[in-house]
Length: 395
Ligand SMILES: Cc1ncc(COP(=O)(O)O)c(C=O)c1O
Image (cartoon, rainbow, N blue to C red; front, side):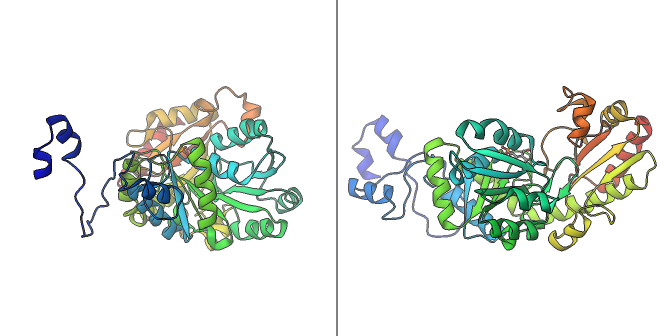
């Protein structure tokens, strides 16, 4: 304090509030809301920058204690050595695939992947000279014949639009046999339902925006992997940007603490909604891996802790009935994203895919009456009543 008395106002305004040393562990990880760090000497700065000595340098992905705490938590839940945080799921996916593949390489990817990932693979990667073969990952022969010579296999544990489940055990084996790096987007499952590293997946990516964060209040991404792949993905991110910010990491840490509790409720509610819909004659199909008879049920039973929080169903009456159902809901919301406290529904035929003609929609697996549901954390009975009254109005 006394040294500051000799300094003028503006200098004290800058320097008097330096972070105090703390040698106790707080219950909540502090938000290190800083873009840069002080070094005692230039030699120190050089040693930390070149990784000769641990320390922090700069906010754009070099490392921040709050982000590192989140990375450690995700690595623990995903049962990997390390993890690395991003500003979005797409930043994680972009950095991961462009770290692994270069011009002249080929990727084998599931055709059933998130639309943003599909666009990255189909439009951007070819501009980088990376070729992508899209396959039906539930057709083992197709995957096996596409894999030889491929640099990596890319799948999602649970995927849109029909809530399909990938057989990670088998796909991991096929990737290993072909010498391809195995990458999985585990966003829909979350590590609560499945830890793909157990099946030999080398890199596990997440949109942390969804179940990991869990409160629809952050946009973020993570890749969980080995320490050496983390180093490589981090090096890409230092060049292209897209690293996670400390406040998002803090929000995500706060969300992770309740991941197990939330997932139990998401899964129980999704199962109850799926049962209601499957028993209703106005519903022509219900897609939920937790239902006996669902094509993904057998794989889900050995690979997932529960059926998940996502479901989809098809209404008789097609486009109009689908839109009317969504518009009639009073508890559930119409909206993008998933994995938050609010139950969200989306009707692709009248929203995200309305520009496609019905034939093209059908080819993409999107029946005109298909509705996707992210089961939220409301009282399940309120949701069951809401879905029942909306079914009555829609059909
Ligand atoms: C399965 C999946 N992966 C990746 C993403 C992209 O994540 P973000 O929106 O955080 O970039 C999404 C977004 O909806 C997603 O659903």
